Length: 586
Image (cartoon, rainbow, N blue to C red; front, side, top):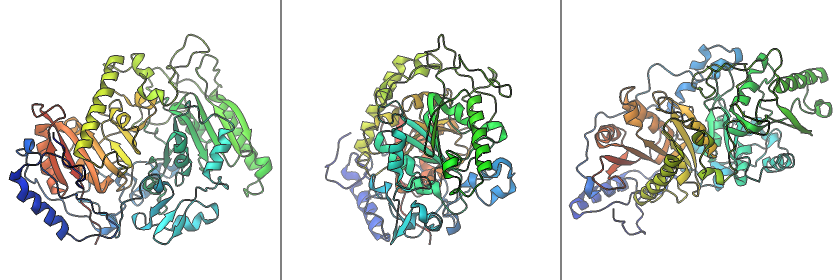
C-alpha cells in the first residue's frame, strides 16, 4: 500500500483515488464545522482517506447508541461503589468485581474540558485536573506530598506515606538491599499502590510494575495512575485470586497498603506467593516493620505492632520464604527457587495436583501452598530460569521450551515474534501516530504470546496484554516470562478500569472468539468506554466479521476504515482502523 506525503497531518495513511476526493472534502468540512473543544489538539480524526482496494467493504449502521448522562462520566460497571454496598463487607468482598446483569447501552461521556494527557515522560509528573476532577487526595495526602493541585493541573512530586524523600530515593534504598539494575528483576506488582509513584519511578530502571488498588468512592487513585501513563488495574486482595498466572512477578511490594497480611490464616500472603516467581522478592515497608524504632510516630501500641510483625514472620516462614534483610522500615523476603527443602508448618499443606495454580478468574483464594514444578536438585529453579532483561523478551519462555503450552513450540514462538514485527510495521504505515509518542497506554485484547507488545518495545508505550479466559490455550504465563505484563479477562464483562484509560486498543480475532458468546455491541461499547477521546482502535478479523463490526462501529460514531491485510487484498482477513471522536458531557 503506497504511502502519502510524510508531511501530511492525517492519522491514517492509505491509498487515495480521485473518485473519493469529494468524500474527503466533505469529511474535512464536517470536522472543521464541529466545535473546537478546549484542550483538544487538532488531529484530523475525521479526515480519513479510504483505501481504494477496500472501498467496497462498507456497512450500514445497525443502530445508534445514545450518549449517557453526565453522572456516568466515571462509570466502572463491575466496581460500582453504590452497587457494591449490597455485598458482604467481610474481607472487603464488597470491593471486588460484581458486574451488573444488564450492560449499559449508552456511550460514557468525558468530563467537560477533557484534554489529551501530557505525553510520556512528562505525564509521570503532571495531569490535567479536568480529566480527573478530584481534589480529595490533595487535601488528605497534602503532608505526604503525593499530589498537588496547581492551576489547571495536578502535579505528582513522587512523595508518599513512606517516601519522605520521594519515591526515587526510596527505590534507591531498596536498590542497596537487592539488585534492581542487572535485569534480573523485570516485572513487579504493587498492591495498594496509591497514585503509583513506586511503579512510575521504577520504569527508569526498566522494571515494569503493575500497580493495583481498589475502586475508591472519591479518590480515584488507579485513575490517577493511568492518567500518568503508568500500568494500573482496579483490584483488591479479598476472596478471589488476582487475575494473574502463577510465577508471574519478580517482585511484589506493599508500602503502608493497609492489607492485613497475617489475618485469615495468611491467605493474602499465600496469594502473593502464588504469583511470585521462584526466587522472587516480597517487600514490606512501614508498620509494623522496625516497630521498636517507629512505634510512637505510628500511634499504635508496642504490643499491637509486635504481635502483627510476629504473625507476618510466622506466615512468611510457613511459605518457606527466607527473610533477607530488615533495614529501617523496609523488610525483604525471598521465595525459594524450589520446594525441595520446604518443610511446611502443620497448619499449611501443599495444594493438590488438581488445583490449577494458573486458574485465576473468579477463583477462590486458598491457604494451601501453591506447589512449584518439580526439580531434580536443590540448585534447579522450578519451572525453568528466565533470562535477565532485555534478553528475556526474545528468548523462548520456559513454559514453551518445557512443552507446557499445547501447540506452541520454540519454532512457532520465533515465527510469531517475526510476524508481529511485520504487522506492527504495517500498522504504522496506516496510523502514522503509532510510535510517535501520541499513544502511551495500550491494550491488547487477545494477546496470545505478547507479540504485539514485543514489537513495540522500543516505543514509549506499555501494553496490557489480555488473555481471554475463553482462549484455546493459556499463554499468559509465557507473556510474563518474556518480561511483559497482562491479565486474564472475559470480554463478555467490562474491564476493571476507569473510563478513558487507554490510548489505543488492539483486538486480534476477538470478535470471532466471542461471536456466539455475547453481544458484539456490548464488547464495542466497553471499548468505547475505556478508550480515550481521539484514541485509536485496531481490529483484525475475518472480512465478514469486520463488516458486522463496522456496522456497530458506525453507531458509535467512530471514524473508521477497513484496509487490506499486510500480505495483500487476496487475504480474507482484513484490518479495521478507527478513531473515537472527541466529545464531552454537556
